[in-house]
Image (cartoon, rainbow over all chains, first blue to last red; front, side, top):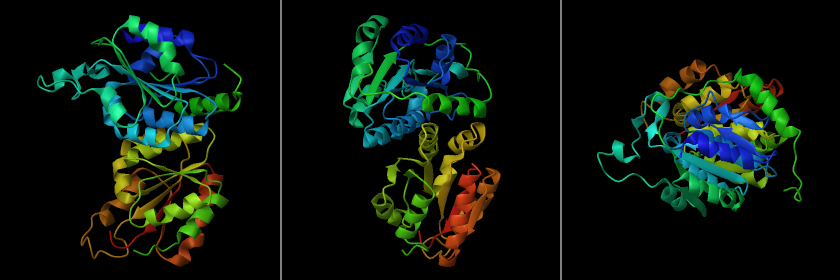
Length: 203
Length: 164
């Protein structure tokens, strides 16, 4: 499955009140599919911090579901965030990790968690890491068909949710471009969150 | 280790400033304040490394909360890229309290290089900070924090600490 294929499906099922935080390659592909006032395109970012930033939004706005789209390379820069997340136990946070085993935007060098970056040693099991960090709702999607069949269950599971999607690397793919001045986007995003509240009866 | 301010004093100030969350990695001075901060109704969020703290606080701020980052100066050094992104790229006014290790006493760490690099680092990151070194400086700390919040600027209070 490609990142675009996986995200296309997420676009369809994403609810209007959902907040979507995206970083790196996932941000590039999420932007390519459209825009939404409650999209936080985390570009520029500090690599690895999307999970932490998503946690902050989820804690401040427990009425909104927060979906974080991040890569495996970013996740392994901030593994401690998995422990912080489960320590806070936000029921409204979903972490989707797009695992291609490489640092795609820098030229597809293997990460130290991927088999190719470990001298042939087995790859690190990111889902197992999440489970050991305290996540109880953990999913793996190795193919587009699995994602199609499992996306609703994953998004509806009690949070915090952690899911790994195995995606194809796209060597040579461009990095994400900032869609506009960051401070102005922050203000617009905050306004979009303020104007949207969700009642318990709302689907 | 005795801090120059009590937990009750700090917690009261943070409450009066409208701080809703304190995102922290403790040290032996800042950690003493945790019970009072929680007791006063401010949510304490413990993170694993300090770089996390800035991004988490950014998310809280974007969601409408009023967070503050509370870390030691060693954690300030660790925070670099995350701090840069939050305070400068996105210009989010996240205030902080930073413990200044060994400033009052180098008995356990003679020649502690925290004394060499802390203030130049704050200046390099263009953070408006005030240094407080004795109990009589509480008003200075309060005024700086209130001014930073009122102006939506990411001010820091650098709190002198004793032995590591």
